[in-house]
Image (cartoon, rainbow, N blue to C red):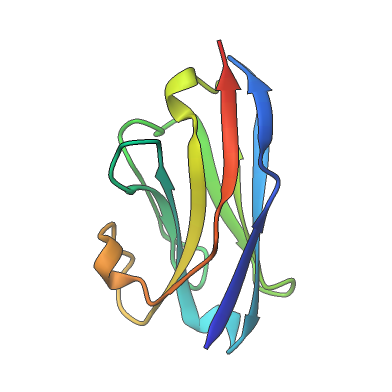
Length: 124
């Protein structure tokens, strides 16, 4: 089992920056690829970004490419999502997730463990 706890959500103005953190406990963190997903009210959960277990490979949704950066610190068992140039459409509950083995993926079904999520609201 891997337990994931997100933190850092809050209210941000349009154009601002914010960083989310996701702390992992349980099994060896460095064995897992990690992802960030988000879900806005009335919408499906969608992929945001993913990072390989080593940190050498990353993937981003087109909607956040160039604005968001995913990173990880395996010594701290933590994955981060740096969000810049935030827009009102980035408002959502952000979840981190862990996927065992293989290449990094964008589909929800590839992820084995999920955090409860943290709310990010971008005011216009």
